[in-house]
Image (cartoon, rainbow, N blue to C red; front, side):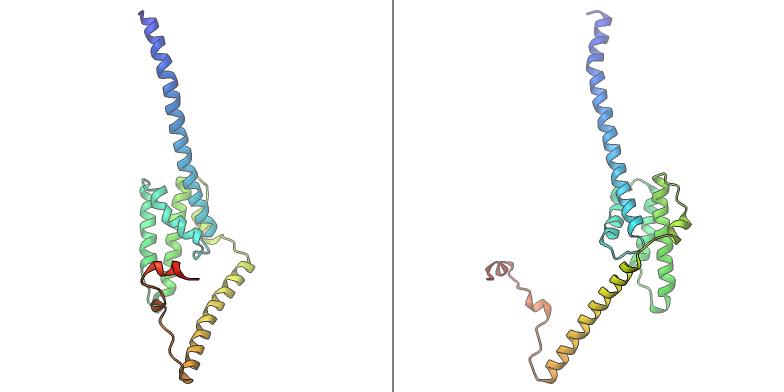
Length: 184
């Protein structure tokens, strides 16, 4: 076999193989960026409504999507420290401001890594929630508090009337999960 034929044979094998490898590498990189972008979008979209499940999901996905980015992971660690810190009632306002500052820093680090030109101050000061959404959320919270008050009042009435005290919720859960299957 001549050197020309050898090179042609190598080219026939290496060319398509390298094209497949480059395509796979490119697709993996694109999929990773899509996941990172989805996490960023959830964070930005829900940063002012941290009780939203999408916010919790996004925060929990940061170590998966950005685990090799030291500045992002450092900002995430600081934010998580603030989240887990239990502030005293006297220190609650300062603590909430600290959490907001750390949240803003975390999101800013992600936007910077993703090469978006968004100022950190814009992330802190500019977010939108419709007043109807805020009103609905406050109404839901008030309704949940009202249910607790109603339950407490009913229990007090039952006690005053001499009725039996209801079982604790834990006592209502069967120890044997198969007992749930036998209900009609």
